[in-house]
Amino acid sequence: MIVDSAAAFDVRDYLRKEMMPHFLCPGCGHGIALRALLWAIHELGIDKDKLAVVSGIGCAGRLSAYIDANTFHVSHGRPLAYATGLALARPDLHVVVITGDGDCLAIGGNHLIHACRRNLKLTCLMLNNEVYGMTGGQVSPTTSETRLTTTTPLGNSEPNFDACALAAAAGASFVGREVTHHVPKLKELIRSGLAHPGFAFVEVLSDCTEIFGRKNELGSSAEMVLRQKSDLRPSAYRDTVDTPFRSNDLPTGVLTKTERPEYGTAYRKAAAAQRVNTAARPSAGANKGDA
View 1 (cartoon, rainbow, N blue to C red):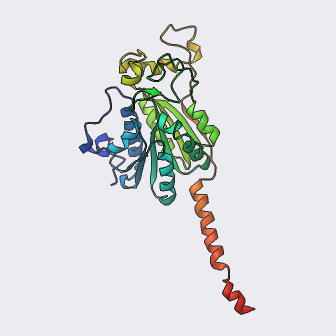
View 2: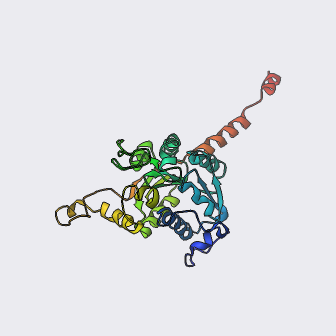
């Protein structure tokens, strides 16, 4: 179904209403991220029949069930592997992966690295709430040091991943990061990723208010969202503004954007050349007869 992109955006046009009410906790940032994604899809005028959304296990993984499009809820850590096959077999589709920090960087970390390396045309939206929210509140690869989780009751002692730096180092041709506090900017970043002619990795810094926030006494959902803003204050505020504003130069927006061959196009070109060569090559029987 094609939705008129010139019409005002109504998120209900893109949702499976029969799946409501959703399962997300009040104040969960994932709902904001979902709205931003659907807003970007609307502005690009992507036909819902040509939209394929693949997700894994976890809170982020459940979001695909609410989208009125071609959706696939697959096994833990494997959405990028499924999406790779889908994008290769159906280059006419807009393939989007929605994944969480645990799903993407822990059990699915190897798939992420190779998806970045291949540069296949698809968009990966990684919703980072620093915890395994659905499955018990365990520590994840992005949990900030010293934070409490069910598996780090004394505080997390492991250094966390910079997911965007990992994606860029692995070869992703588009890498970006944004927070759920900045919804229009998040929408614009996702839109740029969807339009990019290669692999686009977008990290969304989201909030888990129930499992992560309460355990770490981070306040209400509103306070957690406002903390995102204070976390992004530049160093110029160091000597002029008191707490809770503190220096943090965490970069957001488009972090990497390069042009290099898209894997699907290169693969199909090589396959077509092989078919031409095979058709032009004389058969063994014909060679014997000519001799």
